[in-house]
Amino acid sequence: MQAATGTASRLAQSVPPQLWFGISAVFHYLGPAFAVLLFPSIGVLGVAWLRIATAAAAFAPFTRPWRTFAVADIETRLLLVAFGACLALMNCSFYLALERLPMSLVAAIEFVGTIALALAGLRTGRNLLALVMAVVGTFCLLDPQWASDPAGLFWALLNGVLFVGYVVLGHRLAHRGAGGGIAGLGAAMAIALLFVLPFGLREATTALTSPILLGAAIGVGICSSVIPYICDQMAMARLPRASFALMLALLPLSATLIGIIVLRQFPDMRDVLGIALVVSGVALHRPPPDPPG
Image (cartoon, rainbow, N blue to C red; front, side, top):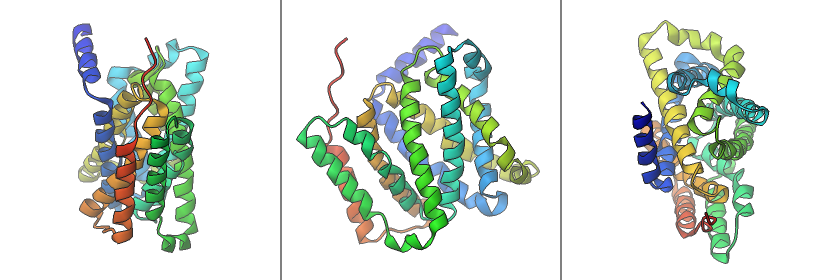
């Protein structure tokens, strides 16, 4: 068992962190795109509940969240509780925003909150230019017509704030020893389930009586919370936080492409310009060198 774990760890380390991020960027919106299709049948909070429950159940057998939490020190326990609460609220607000707004807009607002994190890591004029390009591109994706839906914008803004918390807390978790990394992620997901338990269970029972809906909801949970969160932890462990924050500018591109394929939400020329600026900014960025040792 230990040999297999060591082999898996070496394989994970051999994959460039940018590739881990790229996989996460695809699944970050692929799962939610399919979730939108389930909203009429299960309900928004029901889908959110099933997403978190699926992820918690998937992580539990090999991360043993109860053990991770029990052996962690006080600081790590507080981090796990904070991260779990953030995951629960972020997933719910994200789906409530997707119910009302196009995916590309929600993704653009999600990135706006990480701008401060990227600014904190600026070291060169090149990276400043990269950030400016990414920010301008993101604002090109913000269509003023959607300002007429204040509830949708509220949930999208709340999701953006919580996404900053996800990056900050997730980065801290990725760099901790015992109780960190994938094991910590499993514990945090179990805690997230406890937070969301009272809110979506009633709606989720609709899927529990339908094998087709339940299978679809489980697929959404795997695509939305298992694959991308694991990939994020792999990337966060090896990328400076500011570099990871700027790479999040690729999320509007990912969301737009998946919105076209799955939801038939087609971009206009302004959206295309915004996407091009975002991608160019991320390509231009150069992360700071790794610290010695």
